[in-house]
Length: 275
Image (cartoon, rainbow, N blue to C red):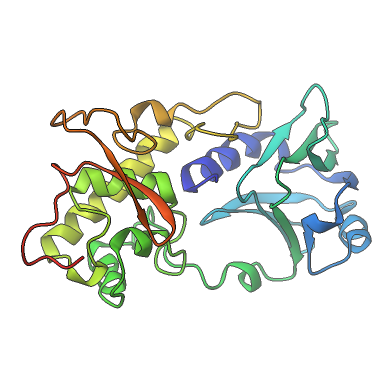
């Protein structure tokens, strides 16, 4: 699933080409893509609307429109947004034609992605936790939010109501960088561990954005090129391989039905620590 770095990359790379442009034609090929409004209502309402700005909240991409409404997209597991692809393939679910003669194609092999056209974006994203890269997201705030949950810290990081935008692979990478086992209970972390984790979350996400996201499965950038963040992964998707720090074998465990990768030597659960 595209996570914060991937959606941020999509936002950054689309903005120069779509902001200031208007929708001149909207073709929705799959009615299951649209939430709330009917397909015809979304199509009719978008025609003529200018894209004033492009934003991101968690894993949601938000088109702010000239009539004050917002077009919100969530790519889910296999969605992608392609700018001017040479061909529209069988996985295309919608095509948006713009006033600059560019077209934006929503591709989605598993048909899990969604779009909303709403008066207020908060009706869709209001339950999301704080943005981990915002200046006001401090270690104290992270500690307060984790301390309320007696669940594995990996599961807490994946809970979008606790912190927005972090997904499976970046949670694994941040926990490895902080030397915290993914099965540790969120409310069991010390203040020092929380401060370290806070710094590692921001560092890992920032580096991934600089590398244009991770193309470990179906994610591609709007121009069809791959991101390269996965080349720097230390544990995520590296089960059975050697830890780059200690040469121990990276293991895979399941944390609340999510596969998690960690180094048992660098991320041990010590006596007295809850799991």
